[in-house]
Image (cartoon, rainbow, N blue to C red; front, side, top):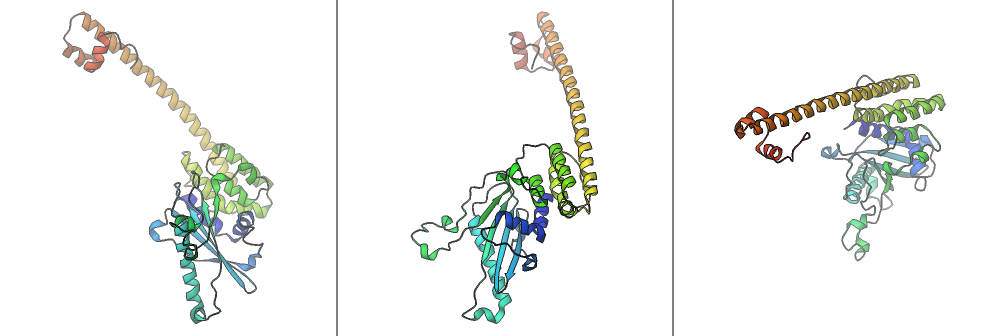
Length: 322
């Protein structure tokens, strides 16, 4: 699994960040719960051959005699999966199967009921999400067979649709992480570094530590794409000073890469100039040899031109540019 993909699972596997995620995106489905009512389930329902494309996080929520689950499917691939309603149903059934197994003989009683599951797709890709959200939309003639087709829909959280201003309206560790991870940002890497540095400077210590624990994976994926090597840094930071050292390093690397890019650009320009000069000299030699009546084979051998290029030179159609 790629660096950023692993970071998403770690982020949503952090109970404090999950509760904030639920308050931000699932408020209508999950009333505010106490952290002691929430348990992260150490399980996955993703087949091994699909774990490069997606991962999942499962939370059990218990309050009094009530029990429910939140199943979050983290979709890593950039292309939309149009089978998502079916996939989500299959994962929910696997979770219910586990509930039946855990209940043992109690599951056979008439009063045994399966717990509700809130299904969530957390999509991090760049394309617009256009897959159906309701399972019935994926079944042919579902309206005719309405009583026989499962009727549910999953909640979609699409990171590409998040607006930077909205994310930063009430900044905390979660919004900072989602901002860095958000695809299609208009800001460059240097601007992202500055914004995160500002957040660290204004956050209280506990909030800064929460951001520090999870920021590496997102920055690593972003920075490596820009050509910055991040291997020297640990996956998790313990304080804001360690994050600041990473940010300073990234800034220095950005300046170095820009300087090298300018030097490479100048060198490429000089090389192109040399090639253009050699090409023009070749044309002059070919014209002189044509005027002296030299055979075509000899001219081609001396200049390296193709017969087509020589024909264009003879007709005056090929001059000092290729």
